[in-house]
Length: 295
Image (cartoon, rainbow, N blue to C red):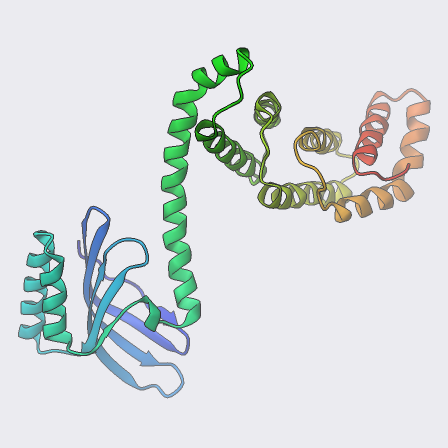
């Protein structure tokens, strides 16, 4: 697969791929290309050819050398591609050693920031694969888990661990949406209570705190928006049933400031019989109770 990529910034250098080819075989991949490097400060220019073999995971083997003759680069590409198409990894590495000599590198030759960036990308891919596997285990074994629960049998670790992982991930995904589906959130909370799951407090607690603080800050800017107030109350009510010790000090400050700014006016309107004002007072009092702020 051939692709010409845009200019890439690498610290104080810029790289422009003149040619870039990528080939895949299962978890393994191979890239070949020719790059023009610019030094952004000194304006120097260098031309290099490269080949990188990814064997899966963090196992990378790359070769980089000064620009070859065109015929040599074409021959190198042909031989490396041919060996890769046959899944002959040893031959791929042998050809790379032949053409790039001692200029061969692995992940450990990169700067620490680049190492972390690449490992993070690999980890994200692996986590997606784990999620797919765990979701299949969870969904395929749900009827069995239900039957065991009815028989008052303790859940097996092989089924409960994937289930907890999936429910936690679904919670996080829902909380990170701009427009939360309250019914979906309640359904997930019901699953947690049904199976007595122990969700990851570190991951879910952080995301829950960020969402609650964000919602309260939005409401602070438009305190007359009753639907937003109702959403904040619903999210808090659901989350407090499954997550403990959420760091919501920003939301607590918003409640305290709103109490001073508009609570009295809403209370007077509620006492005069205004329905929306009564609803506002009810929802606000519940939020203050959830956040442990005295009204």
